[in-house]
Structures are given as structure tokens and as C-alpha cells.
Image (cartoon, rainbow, N blue to C red; front, top):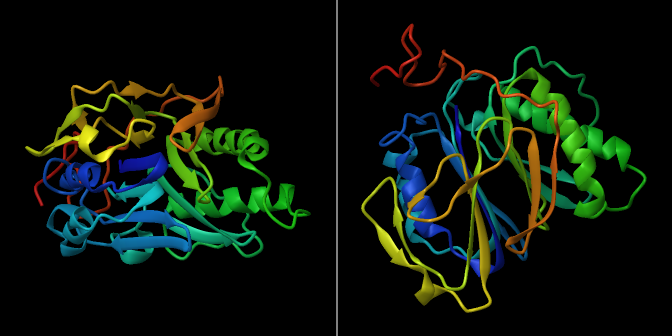
Length: 288
């Protein structure tokens, strides 16, 4: 399945260090080679980069890893296709407008027999189960809070999002990152890990390439940051796993709400792959 990366920070920060290691999993240290994308929330809007090529060989990914875009909320995704071909319209993160806000969504999972009725403005452009789930999620939120001139605050909305995620997760693993630029929402069905960074900041070393960084030089004493990923990106830092069915809301670099749905279960990973690599009969990645 795919790989997720998210960041919530108390101050505008660049994610170039984490993204440098993350991008290697897009075809070099991992077989998530069916496209990638990253979204940065900035004061005037949301900046998104998408590519349908492997991130490890992408000139655009190389540019992102070197250009220090400052943001308080970032979502990134490496795709390993299970439903839908490798193409730009199937690359995450997906973006939609609701209530005058840019909503960004990325997921790691595989949903089966998920065919919700879609009506209104939120319709898929590509052919993935992921985009369909995003459209249905926003449709349900719009119907529940549609009498508001603007969407409600996250603390009011989070329990509703958790309920909807639990409903979708009955169809398969559904690990997601969702944001409107005000908070970063994470839901775990099978695997997500979280790292909290605050003073004293360490020197961190990436798992996927031989790169280290002294984070204390770049951060102030009162800065704080949360990094969320499918698997740990650094060595010797205290990454902690979310539970199956657990949802958390992060604002300004710290968790402000959490909930665990007891009925969510973890599904076996899919043994077929519709993208560039594919799997053999035993589910092992084939050479590209």
C-alpha cells in the first residue's frame, strides 16, 4: 500500500529534511513508485505538487526536497497502486473546496465493495477508491453541517469525522490524513506512527539515506512539531504507533483531541498491485 507523511507545527517550518528521506521510498528503498504528491498550507492558500512518476527519480521531488517552503501543515503521499492506474488524476493528495476552504486528503489503504452514492459537488476525477472515499466524506460533512456559512471548528467536527472514518474502514484498511489548513486530522486502521519534537531538539538521522540534521540549530526553544508517517523516517527518535481505530487531531504541533473506535479492525495487505511493479503470486514485489 501507499506511504503517508504529515506535519503539524507551531510555527512555519520547512519539511525538506523529512521529505528527502520519504521520497527515497518512492522507488528506491520502497516500491511505492506509482506517483507522489505534497501539499503545503500557506497563509494565502494551499500549494500542491503532484507527479505520476516515481518520487526517487522525479526532478520535481528533487526540487521540493531542496526548496524550503515554510508551512504549519504539510501532507505528502507516495502511491503504490491497488485500484486505478498510475496517472496524475489518481495521485494524492486530493483537493476539494468546501465552505471557502481548501480541503486536502491522502490515504493509505485498500477499500473493497465501497460504492457509496455520490450526489452534489464532490465527484471523483480519477479512478481510485481513495478519491471516492474523500468525496463521500466531504459530502457527508456538508450534509451534516450544511446550514453553516462556514464549516464548524475542528473540535466540533472531529467526532463526526471519526464516525465516518469508522464506517469507511469496514471496507478495508483506511489510514488517512485530512486538513483544511486549521488542523491536521489522522485516522489509523493498520499503521501510522507519530513523532513529537520539542526542545531540546536532537540531531536526527534519516532511515532511507545517509543524511543527518541538527534540529536544534533550526528551531527555537518554544517551537514544537508533530510528524506523522506510515513508518519511522529517522533513527533514534521516539516514534510511537497509533492504535487500530485511533483518530487524532493536531493543531499547532500538538494533539488536541483523540478517539479510538473499538470496532475498527486491521485487514490483510492486498496481494495484487495494479501499478508499475506488481506482485508475484506470493505477494512479493516484482522487478520494475
